[in-house]
View 1 (spheres, rainbow, N blue to C red):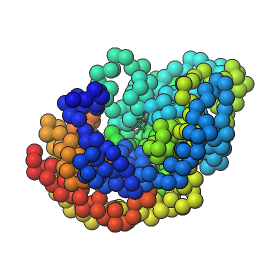
View 2 (view 1 turned 180 degrees about the horizontal axis):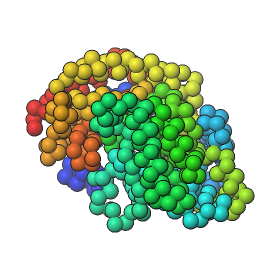
View 3 (view 1 turned 135 degrees about the vertical axis):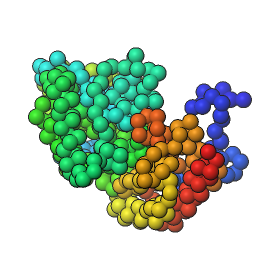
Amino acid sequence: MTRVLHRHLHRKPPVAVGGAGMFLTDAEGRRYLDACGGAAVSCLWHGHPDVLAAIHEQVDRLAYAHTSFFTTEVAETLADELVRTGPAGTSHVYFVSGGSEAVEAALKMARQYFVEIGQPQRSHFVARRQSYHGNTLGALAVGGNEWRRREFAPLLIDVTHVAPCYPYRDLREGETPEAYGRRLAAELDEAIVAAGPDRVIAFVAETVGGATAGVLTPVPGYFRAVREVCDRHGVLLVLDEVMCGMGRTGTLHACEQEGVVPDLITIAKGLGGGFQPIGAVLAQRRLVEAMSRGSGFFQHGHTYLGHPVACAAALAVQRVIERDGLLARVRSSGTAFEAMLRARFGDHPHVGDVRGRGLFWGVELVRDRASKAPFDPAGQLHARVKREAMARGLMTYPMGGTIDGRRGDHVVLAPPFIAGNEHLGEIVERLAPAIDAAIASL
Ligand code: PLP
């Protein structure tokens, strides 16, 4: 009997009782190798002593102070750090408690910017299909995750959705990745023109697509072409790096590898590494200056903005990443992990694509490699893979609806940055039989 309204009303998940290093332990004493950081959250090892010490110290000193009365040293220091390490032009950080809140804040900040500069007619967002930006109503509206949106569609603001960058399925015969990227940017251009270029606030996209379609990495030049289209129409570029940011792809911000600077970046999961709930919006100077010259405040707010304990945890996580050179480690481990995944799944009859960057990988499962035909969605292959992997003591993040919100299955792998090659090898060795067993059970 449980009084917790769990994610699934007919299943109670195992009770987690401990976490140490790469493993979580349940009440039955079973250990689970963490191959996904939950949902790409846990970027350091579970129970990292430096982060725990920082949390303890902050709780003892000051657990909470409402931001309409006070700021705190720890929030100021964390903001300084994030501005120092952020893309050129980053001037301020808005702290929230998670990814959806970060996206909501970014949407409102983008809208307020245009009100402040005398363009209040801008009221429309353009985003991508097969994306995820969170489960609150604004974030769900810009998101293009069909199965998450369906029931709530009548409540959602009207958003134009364009194609994701999904070369495995959408690159045409004979088309180069660069030409494909230009084609997608042209589609965005058309969508903005159709919506009315002076009505559009922003284009919202995950720099590297996350859970919805299984880690979609952008083709070369795609985001530079997108930036150019946005600039031409005076439209802002909001990059959602809640999942792919904060080092997951080998650079602190995934957009660094694309050569673009967005107007707003949302971050969350890896910011606090799961030690505390925290998210943030990194804002470019011109947006903040517009609000400063205009109304003088950002018309938004939550009770737990800039929570001192969450900020202390995030500051400690980010200091460990810098001190221990973990970004370089993500890059080198990522190369090793890719080789292991390709060696194990490169010829697998039911793995259509292995894609990713750094320690962020997607494995797309198909019924038939030649035609790329997916499995029948009724079989819920992704759920079976998750079950089989858990039975083998492996946490992975599989999902269905890879192709269009209904068809397709994939597995997301996002191990903590401190994973050694022995852990990465173990992940692949446990995942392969889990996939085979799941398919055999269909
Ligand atoms: N944006 C992206 C890209 C995400 O992956 C997620 C969560 O998976 C969110 C936003 C929402 O974050 P949260 O679940 O912390 O609200």
